[in-house]
Every structure is written in C-alpha cells, then in structure tokens.
Length: 430
Image (cartoon, rainbow, N blue to C red; front, side, top):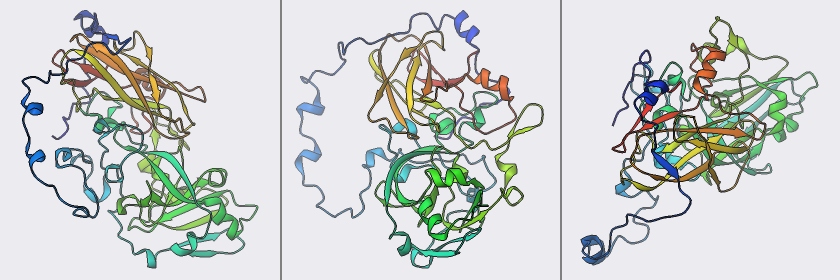
C-alpha cells in the first residue's frame, strides 16, 4: 500500500494528550520468562491434521530456478518508492522494507537505491578507473587490474543523509520503510583505496580526493585524504556476489560511517588535489540549513540512530495479547553500538534491550525486547548509545539545536503508537 502523507503542519498528538487520555497507564510488562503461549492445539486444526497439496505432489527439481527467488508468499517484501518525492524516478530513491527483515544483513535485492541520472548499465570489460591529479604517476585500472590487489571483506551500513528527512517538521510517513528505509547493511568485498593511491604515488601537497561516477550525472564528492587512507574501499562485490547495477556495478566507492552520497557508484575517476572541489558539486542538494539561515559544513558522519522495525505501522501486532517481541536496528558512523534502550510509554521509563549477534563497527546492530502485552495502547521508542558516548537525541532536542529547515541528518528518536487493536501509527510526543 502507498504511504499515508501526514501533513507536516499537523504533527501527531502530544505526549500530554496521551497522558490525559490514559493511554500510558498500564499497557505492557517486560517479559521475565517465556510464559504461556497462544499456540493452537493440534487437535482439530485442519492445517496440521489434514494432508495439504504440498504433501501430495512432487515439487520442482533442482536448477528449476537458476537464480533463486523468494517464496511467492513473500512477494510483498520489496523496495518501494514515494512517487511525489522527486520529479522523476531517474533522480529518486527506493526504500528498504526494514519491517520485513531480521538480523543485520540486507539482501541484495532489497538494498535501498538512490540515483541522480538513473541506473548506469556498464560492460565491465570496457570500464576503467583512473587516478590523476597530484600523483607521481597517473594510472588507469581495468577491472582485472583491480582484482590483483589484496581483497578485504567488511560489513558496513550505508545510510542516505536524507533518511528520516521528511520527519523533521512532524510525523509524516506512516511506515518504517518510508521513515527509515534509506539504509542498508551488507558485506562489501574490495580493495583498500589506500593501495591504489600508493600505486599512483600521492604527492605531499595532496589533501583531498574527488571521486567521480560514470553515470550521466558524473556524480562527484570531495573526500579528505585522511578518510581515504583510513578505511575507504573500492568495492566490486556485496554479500558475496557482484554489485547490482543499481548499487554501482561494476565498482563503487565505500566510505564507512559517512553519508551515502559520498559512496560514489560506477566509480570511474579519482582526482587528487589540495582543496575540496565545492564549486563543482551539487552542494545545494546536501546542505544542512539551520534556523538562522546559516548551514553546517562537512557533516559527513552519520550520527547514532535506531528505530523499532516491529511493531511498526507496516508490521502491526496481529496475534493479540500475550507474549510479544520488539525488534529493531541501531547504527552509528562513530563505530559500534554500546547499548539500546526501549520505552513502552513515550520516554518516561526505559528498559535495556538485548543486542543480538556480533557487534561490528559502522554496521547495523539488531536489538530485541521480549514483553507481555495486555492489549493497552503503547508509545514505543528506542534510544541508541554508541561506543563514542553519543546518545540518540529526541526530535525536540534536535530541533532546538538545529531548527527544522533541513532534511538531512535527522537521527531523532522515533515514536510508534500501538493501539488497542494492534495497529500502529507514526506519532510525536513532547
């Protein structure tokens, strides 16, 4: 279903309104054990007592689906766009269905995409990557040349600077996919950018890089040399297979922890210089405008952030009262997530969630909180804290510091209102 466009000048009910209506009284208790379940008894359930069609007949043989696809019963798990967001789809964005996923790795076919001139379809045998500018020896690499360098595999999240950007002025899009879906996390395979720069020989005066894409927009961004020599990758695979065309096939730049517009796709050239190339970039598209009319500069790092993916507007509680699980994601461009707290009552009380799986720097972290729901309305929030000590702010605190003119770097705490019937709505509390 298409997202509901909630007017930004009419934010959701205030916290005071929820308190006065009694919605925060009771509601749920954090589960201390597995407790009783609502599982159906086997006796009398035809789904278990009667033979089904898939029990009667042989299925398809091996290699009937040469490239595997999800079950037909998962056909709703897809990327989606918002048609009114941009003038054309060639310069638009799709959203990852976070509410349908678990773990931390995003399947390749569900990774959000952002283009400035549509998808470039490139023959890898004809693709070249040039390094020029303030180097001892300008070089041109073929894809086969790149394969000769030492390879590395790293799990990183990629987040668009505009993720959650439409929520700056109030609750607007009624779905986790639309409010937070401009993020994904995959295993990137590639070579250190440092190795390629060392091969060309960077001159002592070099301070900046200008990577350029091979698409029709010739997308460029300035990157300081310190970051380039630290952890940047020139990647050609994700989750073990070749990059998808919409993700920059055959090669892209990976800039861990920094805003996604710097991760140049279809990478074809890297110019080395002694200053940023601001006059050659689309700076107007990525300006953090403050309330007084000035703008924040060099806002590259993606701040600590989290969101509850279930329950959420597209993933309501449909099993009724009893045992339930809150699931969500947290991430930070500063490194690892140290802790995630969850509130059931709009931020009055907090419980530390369980971080599941490995903890990797600049990657998504999955968190869970098991609780017993008594059917009362809830105001769900999550608050992440990273290893650098940064704490995810409330939306009100963020607006007090930066105003509401920007559409970038919104890492404010998200609130979901769970109603008595299990449906969920995007709201604001203060």
